[in-house]
Image (cartoon, rainbow, N blue to C red):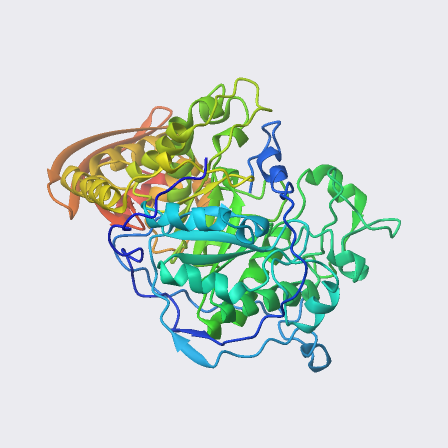
Length: 576
């Protein structure tokens, strides 16, 4: 049901605006070629995103807009020491990917975005698109993610980029006047996000097969759905997609969302079937990070935010377990927004200890976001988390439930409990029920109430008090549970998980006992703790150890005293 009255649109849709991470926006008026025939057949390719990995081994390929303004990301670029790809386009290739620089500046403040996904055909079909605008205007929603280059590798509108226009010649783009579409959104203060599918592309190899992933016999590799994929190590693929992103920015999109920024799944089979030149041995997750850093640098003068869709499960896996090139820390440090796709249907049986995650959306979302928030907390300047929520019924999942507006609302409310006030709802067919959403006034009232409750109770985003965090921290150290203790351990971002694990491997004790004896109340928390470390029949006793617990990156973190840190790796038998 696509709903929504014209309504009055309570408040401004840009409410919750914050200052931008990068500089002011620049956009340039460009004329868009018109006259192509109109394609009104519904798209079906997005269903693959909903059904992908339905066997439960992985999740599908989306946080918080914090109450305070986040710092500007540090400038990083791939260099000769960590990538085999030249970060600069040769002169002879520039014309092929050329997009004019912006000529005027426009404001692009950060907002707490809440929105829906819209396909190219939906964007070009009336009154369907107007219904979306009306629904957004009458609810808490304020944003759209619109396909610009979709899963089929085709464009939504006629592009003026030389290589793109040549490749798309004769294709009937669904949206004839993309600038007019953006103007309609601007009139209602609706935040437009351009979705660009990057490395899964069945269209581009028809014109540039040399840029695709090939089998060992030299033929072009396809996945089990028949899709071809572009080689993430090929820089021309980077420049092709970034050129499209630049043009989208000039047209008026405020954010570029890169999707399928990864290698194909089923890595065990994929790796044995393909031949990908990689002379310097750059890891998959490193080259994906380098692409995003390069994209952000190339787009910095266009003043658009850069975001990436990722598998929800990468917030749970410490390493690139599935071999797709997505590691949480490497992506969240490279973009402005990270969109984990935490659809309950795409977590397999037993994930998070839940027999059928699809049937328990609240518990699944809580666990998924808990992991995401903690992973973000380990990065000095992480992206904001905007989760993709499930707006469809996963009929292929055994034990699935029907997802109505109530299940969508439950996911939104669950995220809000975790301090995540931004979200996007995914439905491949673009069928949305207005009853899933509150009015803007109601939503702001709820958010304010949750913030006040969290502050008064002394809770971080995962819902822990400072003392609970300290107890968990010491408990996880006793268990030598490196993965769980790592997010809580304050190290001034001098450790990554590899260094932390190396240090933890030096711990010598067998068992740790602790007793919190004194608490300094308030938000500047100091605790006195008596600790006994045991190894066999020997013990190390530490009295009145002062642990400081403070808020950083949305969670409580523990700064342990030096005496305790040293005792963890002490040599027993040498103690008095």
